Image (cartoon, rainbow, N blue to C red):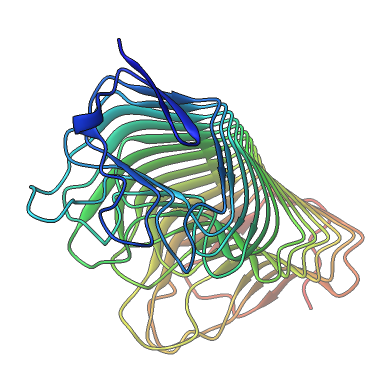
Amino acid sequence: AVSIEHTFCRLIGVTIADIRPTVNTINGVWILASDFSMTQCDLTAMATGGGLGFVMSTGASRARIYDNYFFGWGWCDVGRPEVGNPLPNITDWMVSNNLFRQSGFWHVVVAGSGLATGSRRGVISDNVMQFVEIQHAIYCQGGEVSITGNVIDNCLQQGIRLGAGMTGIGRHNYVVSGNVVSNCADGIAIYGNIDGAVITGNTVKTCTAKGFASSIAAGQPTNILLTNNIFANNPTGADIETMADAIIENNIFVTNSTGIHLGFSGAGGTHAVRLLIKGNRFDGEVAGLFAGQITMNSVANIDIVDNQFLNGGRCINLLGGVGDRSGVNIIGNKFVTPSVAAIAGTIEADYVVRDNIGFVTE
């Protein structure tokens, strides 16, 4: 392997021919090699005005980006196309143990520019990411990506955003685990036709909107497992605007205004259907689990089983609407000292409500 001391950076396994330092005037360094490492680099304010600090582009598979310092407007971009080259399909890459501070747009963006192909089989782990002034800390548009052990604080929009937000383009097989996200608009958000994501062991706190968000922006996420997370002191712990065939289990929701919100408050043909909500703990929520007065959309075939609701207002509040409200089962839940009601709202004819402890209707 070749080691190059490139101005501000140590690059291992890269030749001069692999480097595009002047693709345009606002970019820092652009790498087209594969099987290379970048480590012990100080990338301080080396791209300004929204420039790309470091880019892995066409052919840059099996890259390892670790133990670096990113500061200023630049970011690390995995899979942006170079002019005149094919769309990148970068695989088996790693971005780990870096410190990212004060980025204008993102800290790490995967498969930039809304690419349909994108970068996959990657790992973003154990980074510290602080202060994103415009968008997200991690913006992941490629599939088969593991995002684990990162500490993210203070982003204008989402801490971690999965999916491109483009209808008809499927993404799949994400793992988001063991991250700590705070002081963002949304902590973790999923957009578009994502099929398969495990979101587990994360702590999301003090966000200004939602701890977890499943957005109606484009397509419907399916086969999502949201488990063993802590959502604390957010306006909404988990906002499920649209999702199907998903499990939400063994999470802790504490002192959010609403623990889980189901559905979307306008027309649009999106649905929260075929969900299992099981074994969660809601503590001190004004509304533990709330389905609003949805105009046209469905909130149906929901199993609400074996949850604990402690010291809340309305623990389960299901309002009627024009869309499908059938097939809701409320079974084996425990309600402790609700200040308003254990179960409130509209109970449809086919609902099953049984074996709950402390059940008191409004």
